Image 1: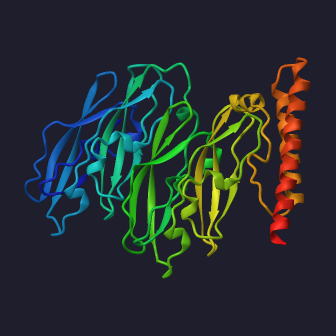
Image 2: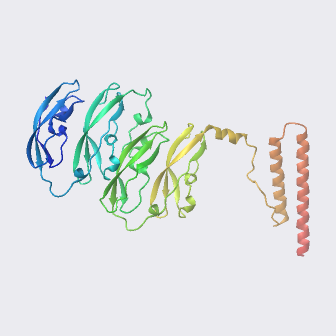
Image 3: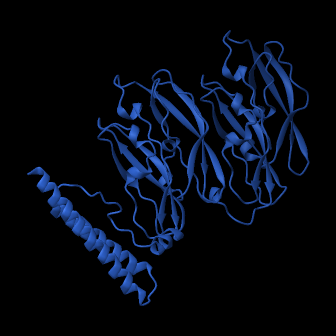
Length: 407
């Protein structure tokens, strides 16, 4: 049985009918509350009003209450200024409720720092087309709040559980020096190490940078999973006292680039994933904080710590593409010597002889690898060795002539 309670409001503001029911949590999910007649709040004072309580089976009852209108205190609150508009939430039958902020249609019009919580958490529909109802509490930066009803619609389950169904990102506040720069959005995800490899974390709604210590702003972070599903979570940014001295981590912003690695290969040096390392200060160090999985083909994610000369550091996420084809391509390449080019330096005749011999040796090895297995192989090698001997003789001649000129 619904129990009525007095409702306090400011003159000119009609409260939600649900605020007049004290025991909403005892009533069945999906129960609706409406005013039989809109209460008169044009003037201050207690006014009688009646709430119609309609149950999911269509039956209803009425509850008498009093609405107490009070004069505004002269200062308009955020709850007076802003009016949240709700929208139904679609939830797969038997699935999980999303973040309550998804029910607010015009949250982009709300002030930065507004928070959304379940006031009365709706039941999850157990079958498609089933409807349940809850309420969301909207709390503004000035501490004022309002509560709005929200409807949840049951939909057909997709049949396949997505990564967004399996994983739940946990957020944590981000500390930013007042007037500083926002860090990578991944710093706002507390349990990113528990999320699957290959995720991307981006700002969905970039928060404003606090302009003074203890100022709080709020944004949203979008987590996209390897299967393409995604979820958006709110993240709070706290303004802190500036250090007084700008660190290298404040000055420099490492930009990452994807890394291609053959399956089962070795992880390259962490610096190879930093696109703009030539713009980093001399002495900057790069190390793998979280190494990506190289045992399976696909896209994986790692984390690199960039440590600057002043010992300040920043963590950045890097995508790694593990490709089974890379190893095969490497195996099929013709032999490439470590000495890919040679310069004949007129230092002394011994150097010329050594270099010419190296050329002959490498050329012979390369020919041995690439020519077909026929009798002409020996002739080719002999020809090459002949050329090498001629080159050595020529070089010796050059060396002797040079010595004569010097005398």
